[in-house]
Image 1 (tube, rainbow, N blue to C red):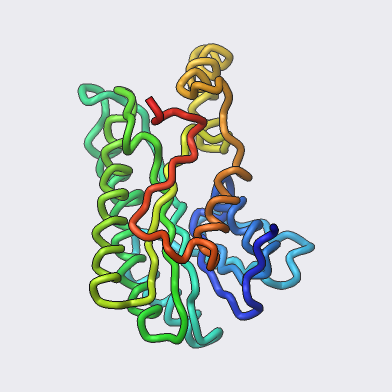
Image 2 (tube, rainbow, N blue to C red):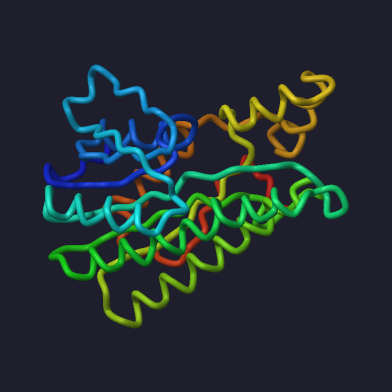
Length: 253
């Protein structure tokens, strides 16, 4: 059964210029949502979006930027039904090799931005009629790290912890807000393509990445987008504080 959002459903999707964010934004639009597609990079607006994809420039690490974005959405649409935090960055490196500035950047973009956006979204959602949903894109590396993901895995494990504590807070306060996370395995995205491009041998690097999954393949963006659409829908009304692994079995063993 295809999921359809109500005609007044409004969502923010960050990292929407490419990869997982772009895929989730498109899936939400197909389900009938109005999507504020936010990214620091330019967003290509599809011709067949029915006017429901609204590009916005956003630095996800800026508290002022988040306040302005959400206040503007409430002023224009009167509500915010869903926030999907996708924007992130990765620099590979083990604990001895990773530079501190790269580690700080991953904490800033991957974790601090979600802390800010969650605070701002709760502020808006708790004051409106109906329920709200926040979906954080964490990573299978939050549960099963590789040595070369030292900083990235740490940031994503922290995202999972923040997801749980924020979900519990909303439940205890009786806010009708569900907060969950998706933990993707290795997805065929521009970020992953960048890692492959920087490898001495692309084919060897690809095989090594694929071997992290028991299925021996990489995930597609559409597989992550489908789970995000489900979590944002009433079908997931009983799910909160969860981390749903979509990883081709990467964390099963």
